[in-house]
Length: 101
Image (cartoon, rainbow, N blue to C red; front, side):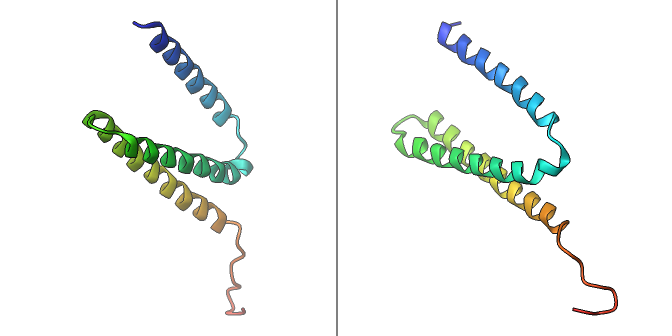
């Protein structure tokens, strides 16, 4: 294995463990703000994937990987916003049962 690939794999595995440890320690009260932040990061990833995909010339593998990255990033962004909206609905006051407004 080339040394650069081994170093990148090492960093990726460490990032996975770090991410898992951070996410499991988040209290429920902070889930909504963190979801909004992760949506912003996913949006940045989508923009990066679009730029890289637009620069590809003649390499179909990279083109298709870019298309898949854009699609998965957009699914993540849309799903994150739906979950965030649903969580924020829990904090809205509900109207009284007597029909008062």
